[in-house]
Length: 123
Image (cartoon, rainbow, N blue to C red; front, top):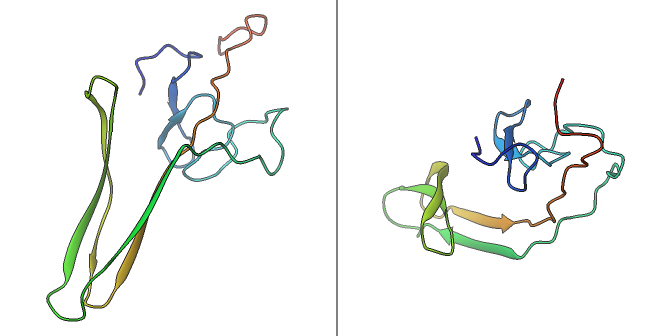
């Protein structure tokens, strides 16, 4: 989990549905898309988050040759070029003449500060 204190921008928690690490501020899990809490500001169809980065690419195995195996890994580095996350996303194999498309999307939303009147404690 995150070393950032609960309620701070960037604080994380585990999704109770899929067990992935997600932002504590998320009302909907970005992985399994389950609702995590009722949020008065959230509609049934939330507006899409701004996407400052989206990369999509495809690879096609040539018609001849042996099957290929592939590994999808994502790493995140900070402004000092220190790796802060490195995650294996998936593995697979491709037979001749098969194609796979990979998409990397980074969504960004403003961090919401906790309301000091409501407190940040959990009971």
